[in-house]
Every structure is written in structure tokens, then in C-alpha cells.
Image (cartoon, rainbow, N blue to C red; front, side, top):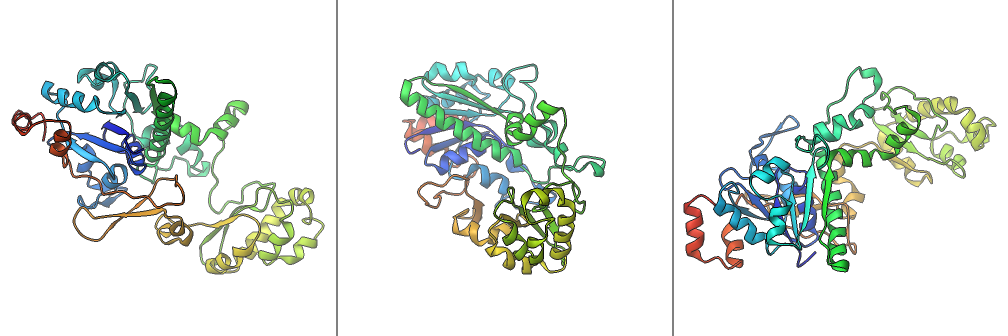
Amino acid sequence: MQGVRVLEVAQFTFVPAAGAILADWGADVIKVEHPVRGDTQRGFIYMGGFQLDPNRHPLIEHPNRGKRSVGIDITKPEGREVLYEIARTADVFLTNYLPSQRQKHKFDIEHIRAVNPDIIYARGSAYGDKGPQRDVGGFDGTAFWTRSGIGHALSPEQLGGILSQGIPAFGDSIGGMFIAGGISAALFHRDRTGEALELDVSLLSTAWWAASASVTQGMETGETMRAHMPDAMAPTVNPFMGNYRTSDGGTINLCIVSPTGYIRDAFEHLDLPELADDPRFCDVQPLMENAAEAAELIARSIGSKPFDYWRERLKTMKGQWAPVQSLVDLADDEQALANDMIVEVEGADGGRPFRMVRGPVQFNHEPVQTTRAPQASEHTEIVLMELGFDWDRIEELKNCGAIA
């Protein structure tokens, strides 16, 4: 993406996360922030019940690394003129503001295209840019988790209610990747045809794509899938699929979707070699017919030994499995580290490096090179001087409050 300039007028994580991905890929991403308060998310002091250090802020660093920040008050005519001058040099305009705000402050597609007809205009929204709720705001906790049906599907019926989301910016980060992919396709299309596209991604569409196999099944049958309680033995036709508890409270997930060719090896690794010759379990058809009994025997075996035993024991099993880990466990996972899934940038407080997750795409096996998220308005003068603003004009814009 070197040579691509992205002008981002967006807050929070959904949409800014797309800018972060594009910055990871080499784009020059200019983030426009309010000259006094910056991105509203900078003021968040709690995340998931944990108090945040404003100088080491995950909800700022994750969706804003690699960018440059320019402080512009787009409610002022002078500020909008500065915005338009940057837009003239940009390839992509990226926003998650509601239609009413885009119109009120004159940065909707017709305003931006008036100064740059070739710009790709990318919008992120809660529920989409068409229909009666196009001007309704939302967060991933509402549009992605609650309204989409994902929270319902992942909450066991026995709970009698819906689990809270548990992971801040969950749908935001997924949706940001979708926007970055759409922008990449739009840039490719423009290069091929000369046509500049507009594109939309909503949190609702993000959720439905993520759950699309189940959504399609539901539309086909009228039935909805639900998660099961951890200690409930769910109905199964395949005992090699499910979560099994270890003697010390850990969990091993077996996920041998197609047992053909795996039965003997799996039973041997599960310390049940005799079951491979048992006529009830020795082939796929009888295994399916006696799945509940086999699952009970597997649960008893896994439950007789500790988590670390099974982590080591199952390393050579041919079939698919995984240890159930926390998000913190993954930070030391040897496979995650081997694949450069963590990137370090300088700490905004000048202290130890700040560790972040790289985007899911890796090119040529190379680690991501990026920088910390900018301080609010950190690059205003630099960017404007690159555009040819002289110091007198910059000072004049500062004095009237149009920029910071």
C-alpha cells in the first residue's frame, strides 16, 4: 500500500481498525481528530471492568497504530477547507460518522467527491447505509453481538439469558478487516477501470457473515443453533468432537470432524487402545451409532489425568484437537510467536515496548513493521506543511480554532 493515502474521519474502533490494517500494509493513514478532545475513545478509562492507563491504552493503540493524527475542527468552515485540501491528495476517504453528521458538516460522498472525483469513499455503520435505520448508531455490543443473533447463539439456553459480549471491540476489529479488504478491492478496481467506488460494511453484516453457515441453516429450517453448557454432554453423532474436562479443571477440545482413518490413532492417544477393536467403535458407522457411549468413555479417560498430561500426550495425535486457552495464554503460545502474531512498538509513555496483535494477513512470512498510535493532533503541522501550507496560514488556522 505504499503510495496510497487514506484520510480517516472516524472514532472508536470500528473503521479506525481498517485504517490500522491499511497502515500495517504501508498506506499513509491520516487520522482527523477533534482539536481539543481528540478521538472520544481516548477518554475511555475502563475496558471490560479494567482501569486503563491513558498512556498505554489498548483501545487507542490497537486501531490507530501506524497513523498520523491531524487536529481539525470540521464543524468550522475553515476546518472543512483544510479537510478538503487533504482529501484532494487522498486515495481513500474512511468514515463511520452517521449520515446526518456527514451532511451537517459537509463531508458526505458528494462533498468529498466534489474536491476529488477519483477518491474511494468507504463507510462503516451499525446497520448499513440503506433502509429506515441508516441513521441509527450502534456499537459492536448492540449491532454485532446482540441484534445479529450471535450473542443468542453463544449463550446456552439453560442460562435463561444472554451472555454479555466479554471481548471489547470484538466485532469492530473483524469488521475493520472487512473494510480494509473492500478498500483493497476498490483500489484494484480503480486501477483496472479508472472508476472510483463507494463501499459499505456494517457491524450487522459483519456478524452475519461470521455466523453465515448457521444463519443460512436457520433460514432453511427455521431452527436456531445454541451453545451448550460446559458440563453438559451435548447430543452427538461424533464422540471425537467436543470439549472434555481434565482432572485439574482444564479443557481439551477434540475436533476430528471426519473420523475415517483416525479412529485407532485417536483411541490410542486417548489411552483407550482397546476401543479401536471394539465392534461398537471400530468403524465410522458403529461409532456414530454408539457415539454417546464412546463420548462417556472418552470423558472418563480425559477426566482422569491433568491438563498438561494431555497437552503433551496429544501432540502426536493425527486428528485435530486444541487446548482451551485464555487470551492471556496466547501471548506466550510458541506457535503464535513463531508466526509473528505479536508486534512491538515504542510505549507512548517512553517505557517498555507496547505489545499488540498484528493483523491476520502476513505477506512473505515477514513481521509487521509499524509505529505506536499517534498522540491527538501530533502531526498537524507536519502534514499541512507537506501540503504546502505556510506557517502564517497554519498560525491563522490555529488562532481561529480550526486546527490544533
